[in-house]
Length: 335
Image (cartoon, rainbow, N blue to C red; front, side, top):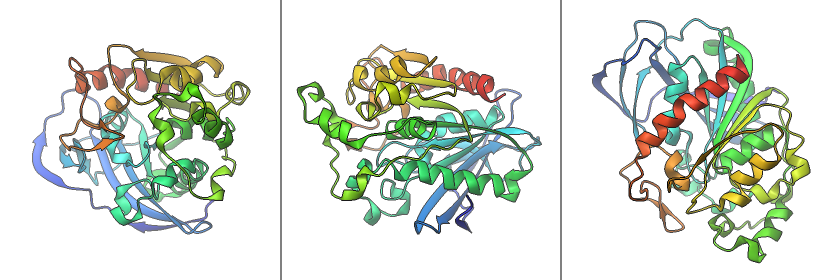
């Protein structure tokens, strides 16, 4: 499964020269980016990589154009072996919107491969955005699989990977994680739910498809050894029996007082039906977009601000609470 062409583009979004002192004896987070092409589908795949940098490297600030982080740009990779974690973003976002967890995992010894999905990510240019792409879930696992093919063959990483692979995703990326981990998805079930009274207040139903291809089946990847879903969307598209087929460790983190996706139909549904799923519930008023990087940009989706949280919610504090939970889960599941 190596139908990819790679065009190297190791220029980060924007890097500053201010040095960030390391606050602990962990690795610095290395960073590089590249763009590949799935030659079967003639589809570009932009990849952001975060990884444990070799000792002696220092982090500097980086502006991801959504949030700001700190990385050692183009630093050498620390000696392995390192587990690999694939990352899938929410609808109309980008992998770099989740630098808070990607950088933390890199500092904790993981290689993170962030996949930005064509048609749903501004990294390819505003003219490529297509809101109907949000209903084509089947494209996303294929992107992740092709990105995984590329990463394990990439000389920079290949000899330092442990062979253990996890995936983390938010919203539609959470659904992507569940689908590629083995649960079959049914778009018709989502459409039936959205047409019913049960979907009242579910803003996820505002995404509408406009082509006949959105019913294609999703493809699992047997190389996935663990999955983390952050407030996953598209819950009604996975039947209880479909979710029961997941046989890898899973962690579902959901916001119970959700401003976008009703918890019972999405995160709660996944938790209830994935065998042995671990669960973390955020119940203090955190919203669906608390899982994004902190940002000052005034963007909104369906009237919900991407950078705005309810009074009393400290997004950075939420991230700080979740970082060790996610890292510990992956440490346990991926060794």
